[in-house]
Length: 355
Image 1: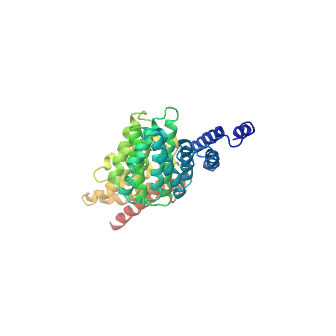
Image 2: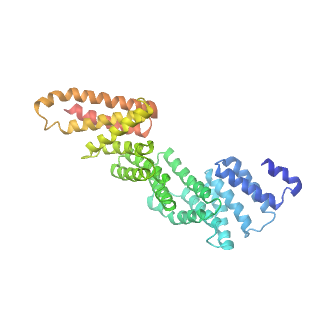
Image 3: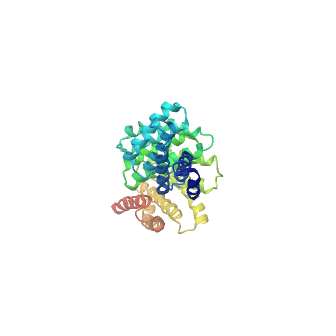
């Protein structure tokens, strides 16, 4: 900004060259997520451009696009929609539909409309896919800044998702997670970004009790990271760990769950220590798996085994609680994984109490 200000006396404060520099600065700040600094730079670029161009001129539309996307990132969707829509119309007319900036305008206009839509309505969210996907594909074609442009666009979509997560609007969170995965998959299938999304969404579905989809998402996530990392890497073991917790509650998968959790417990206790919440979760869910197996076999157990079962149950309950305690200390009591573990504990204690 100091460099631009130093050029004003030489060029004149409303020189068209300064509009270009202010626009470049606004874009760089937008990439850096410095939105409060980016907006005045975009406003200044637009103010100067309005002195030199007509409403139907592409340079003015580019300034409107920059300002609209920055306003949208700050949650001003209704205010952003007008400059974004105007920019898209002018750029399509002036430059044709294949120009990268047209794709940028298409993406952010669709995203602004998505902000103003009932996002708990899955079909309504999915209806924006064509514009979002086409816009991203065109952004990707930018020879110089394609990667930054697409990463920033996806960041802004994810920002909307994070807002819904903060508000615990779970239907909207699920709809937006699915959409974000479709966008990332279309741009870069098999990427680590897609693996991370699948892990995050799978963990959420696990906490929400949607175990079948959770397992499928973790299988997808694990498959991707195994193609990139050694089997002993943290990223691989993290997915194995989550699969173990998911399978611990699925009938017929107890033995596999125990094997997966044994691997994760050994790895994370060595790497992170016994008090780490991941280690605690592995410890607690190993006890959960064994306790469920013990309870499932209670009805058919012989008399001698039944005599021993109460002591074994007490031991496993103690292990389960110790693991959950580590989770609570590390993640916090309100964390979804802690709440899920506490719900599983309550369910198992109720069964034990009925024997």
